[in-house]
Image (cartoon, rainbow, N blue to C red; front, top):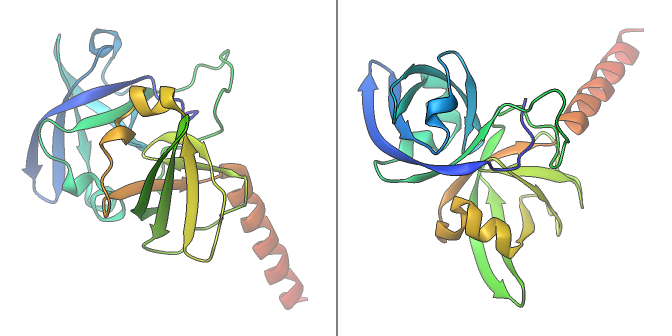
Amino acid sequence: MFTGIIESTGKLIAVSKEGSNLRLRMQAKFTQELKVDQSVAHNGICLTISNLSTDWYEVVAIDETIHKTTIGHWQANDRINLERGMAANARLDGHIVQGHVDAQAKCVGIEKKEGSYLLNFQFTKELPLLIEKGSITIDGISLTCFNCKEDLFSVEIIPYTWEHTNIAHLKLGQLVNIESDLIGRYFLAYLKQQEWLRTQS
């Protein structure tokens, strides 16, 4: 479980193909604090550490992850947003995030404003849930969405987030990983189940 508050950015130093999987070697400030089997969110994708050394660690992305996220487009030297799992006694400063990507979205607008950056995104597929002023995760970053339309939404980025994540390197047309709000997603699933039960009675 994560919060969407990026701990640091890491550097992708190598990508190799293993059958239908991808093995990624990363460098991060906290590499020496990691252990094998630990989960770390990479641009919002929960991946398990399979191997590590003193200055790098490796994770493996399976075919399902490659097809549903942007990970197949990553290249050596890319900066990746990183977050370790939330500690049970920590404050939930963002929102509840699983690291399970729902969809990808394309950046269709970047506007610098006084004190912030306005970003617009277009879905590449339908999200399970999108709520005006609700929580959304973009490449692992917990944000509030607004101007929500059928296939469009906006977020505003404060200078700290712009400077301490990889979102400053975002380009028009680039795809990002999207995870919708977990609580809302479960509530929507509950409503659909209740509707199904009513049709059976």
